[in-house]
Length: 420
Image (cartoon, rainbow, N blue to C red; front, side, top):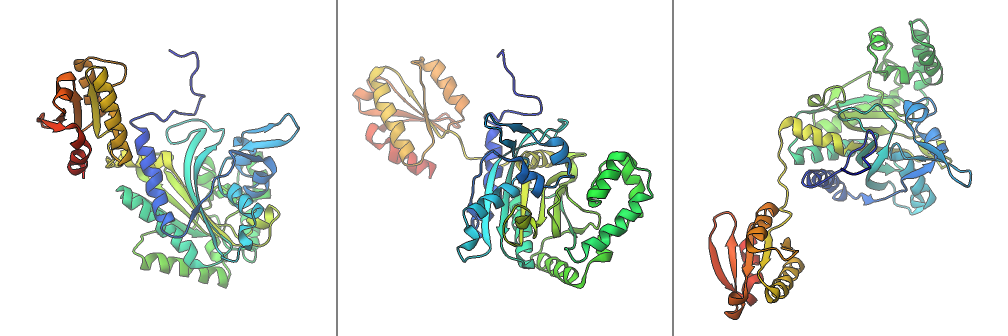
């Protein structure tokens, strides 16, 4: 037993389970790469102020969950709790929006950190794949991102997820709703922290998960009743485009999401097989975020999908992913000359794209064949001094048990033909 263990609320990804996580990341990224999104990678930590401004001073993420620290030089930094603010900061810093081709379409994959009470589906270190389309205000862009996420989930074989959709209005109509909601909340029996939050951003209260709060929100005014004509028309077009693409969704007038920067379109992907942590991803439009962090007006939209929770959703549905074999061929040498010859053949196989491994450590035939079985390889190539003297190796089909002699110089071509 090691002296050290993974920190509370974190986990290690280990084979063979780690292959599922890689497959999920690839499935989410594939439709993005096919739709003009380029890959971006940002630092694991940023200025505390970037998240305070962008995510919101009143959010639980900033007030309770952010891992913040001071460097030796006195700079206040935070481990990134989400991806959008970092991606937008990087795009602005590199002036990608000035290249003349808007929207700037970016996708990313990485680890994020929040100090939360650990439970299944909620970790202090978690993985997401996200996408951002920066610099264009177009209902088709909102619809595109929702459709691409739906496509990614369908490609994995997920079926029992739902898409929740809402509009949070804009700077014209939201202030009117905000005032009406604050007036409503002032008449409820809420604790001091919640009342303070209602003063800063009353929409945050709608996202409160406590039953004692939710019971009192039944008659809360709904934002959809306060939308201006522009926001109504925008939202209706998003709904029409998604519907025309054959993507099902549910209107959820109380959907808020946990970040302050959302405007207009907001959406969430939920899976009912995950218990209380039902959200597997979500996103929306954030037209004012660029200005919040010191940039020009750049209307934008994006989402992030949780890799961890997507894996849990697949398990809840009993979906078994078709994963490529980590090893297709396993070489078992018997003697020093065979080690030299078979190691060269394994190297050749890898060069032509065949997953191959080798019996390291000078094990005998019995132990090496056990390793071959454990590797999951379809074929084993075995050779000893007598085989090499005859210019052959033994090719064994690990499924059928059939074994044939193949010329040393024919092994690679034979395996290429068999493995296709």
